[in-house]
Amino acid sequence: MAEEESTLTVLVALGANAAIGVLKLVAGIFTGSAAMFAEAAHSVADTATEGLLLTALRRSERKADRKHPFGYGKERFFWSLIAAVSIFVSGAVFAIIEGIRTMLDPEVEQTLAWVAYAVLAVSFLLEGVSWLQALRQVRSQAAAHDQSLAAFLRTTDDPTVKTVFFEDSAALVGLLLAFGGIGLHGLTGSGFWDGLASLLIGVLLSGVAYILGRTNKGLLIGRQADQRLVFAVRDRLAARAEVGQVVDLLTMMLGTDRILLCARLDFDDALGAADVEHGCVAIDAALREEFPDLDEIFLEPVPRSDPAIRARVLERYGPEPGEPR
Image (tube, rainbow, N blue to C red):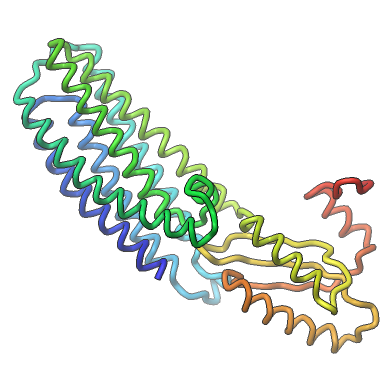
């Protein structure tokens, strides 16, 4: 269901941006407005981005195989990172260059400003439809994770919906900047304001590209799962009768809603080898039932007093509050 909703969100954004891009380009040609050309580049970048996100959705759902035993979930992070680069290269850089060029030569004549206003109004309507769809999905997923909107956007492992939401938010702000630049150009007769609007649109896109690029970099490197899930899994393991102590717990995002779990457990010394084996099977089944996002689970029996393991745990996390090193 979440995958279908993500695909719908991306398709709505793709259709809106493709139509808007053509309108903005035509308006830029008729008016000579740097801000309109910057907005056309913005829409081209967004359209390319949505195409990359559709690729991410399709390729990340492939099943695990011999070459990729943990599946292809991280393809979504990779293509979303490429989408962030696309926003910067094909949108932000062009808008900044066009803005600086116009600011250095502000005597550019503005013609048929009403065409630009009409296109901006239609674009705002279409972008608003796409933004509302993205907002609806973000709110729905935030509620499902029992998080605020801001917290969900910071921690989500679904870069597709986050990318569309930030893209569309930036698009709406960019349209307001273009409207202001064209309006001030008409009032003052100076193209400086038009160029400044283009420059600000480029800066806005650079900021969005940076945020999205940083998010996907963290996911590609191997980000830990949501801390609430980590703590819940730790508590469930500690409560098991077979387990004396949870010595170490590692998680990593393998894809959207797909988590790798590695747990080092000190089992009850009274258990035999067969008991430990059956206990591992039972723990695996119980965790998968309660936490469906766990895709791969590895349980390693270890003694809690092993100095090498303790040293690695302390190096990674530091001691518990009040615990000596």
